[in-house]
Image (cartoon, rainbow over all chains, first blue to last red; front, side):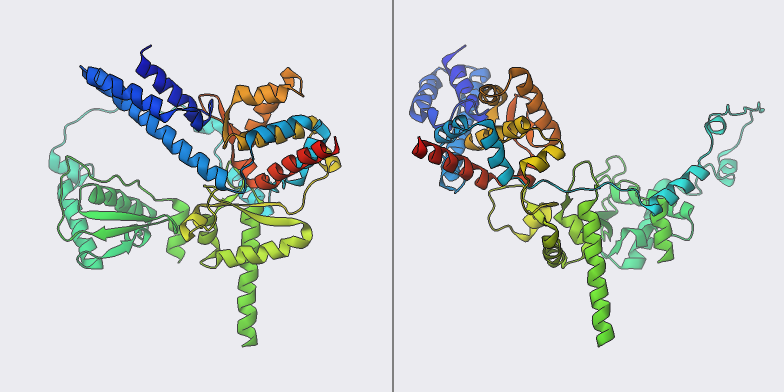
Length: 257
Length: 195
């Protein structure tokens, strides 16, 4: 192990609490770093030098924290504290601890409402025998359909996906005005749950492709969709990732409001 | 007017009830509720609601305890208060007899006290072997490892991947560190004077 590696190891011992911050002689460590600096020949040596400087700066940080800690009312000389602890018998230590201990109070309780909801869930739960039934597979003749026929059957959208997103963006602009904003649920919410899911799905792409922005208010746990006057569409590279948030219960609550 | 007042009072009572439900019942993996969660449920006057609740809990020997992410902060900002965790703890303290009835052996309490005080004296972190060495002076070796593991599981101590112990969330919520250190030192001084 080189001299530089030893001082890095020494500095790391401070970080892990194995030695006190002021056990490190700053001038000595600095002199070792300075001594090796002219010998740097390759990137590995540079990295080692940088590592030593970083670790030494962390020691300085710990020394600063140590002084701050010492200036607080909590500071008591560690030696004196450990000597006091050793001098006390177990009963006295326990007694001291109990005088400064305020245990937490927490409860776990099953409410009648939770039980009722669970029972209702149980009632709606499909038995395993039914859920895991083998699906009946029916052999069908294969055929050929044209693109128009696939559109008529609803397997393909009438227009291109980009057209749909752009129409959606225009709808947003009409509702909130250029650059305006709207709460997430007010934007995606529709009369049916299926329509709501569809609008949430399109919103993900509208935001991801750069037609709109989304902000999240952590305090209120709410998303806001913001119309972009000048979209920067680039379907190849989605800019923002937005999860599809369409909880059925939340949709019911929104609709009832 | 009287009707309006009673409506406001009713609303405040409802908020107090909501605060009780949030603080007493376990909602997450860990007990306690963050300030922003309380604000979301109780509204902008959430801190006043907590103050009133704290007063109402006083006769029951309980209190609302606030634990900041950084224990060194003396005057927290609004943002720091919203990030703080709130708990219900006992206002007073526990006797040895009561501690036994809630499942604590005297050795376990003493072991926790020594571990916490020792870690505080080392500026909040210390290698596990050092804490074990201190505990082994008065407790059998096999118990020491078992006890430290128990303190970690209960959330009093934390251990990082390098085997460094630190004070975890439960110590910060339940233990009055300053009082503990002061009592240990003053007890030590008294012992020295009487010797």
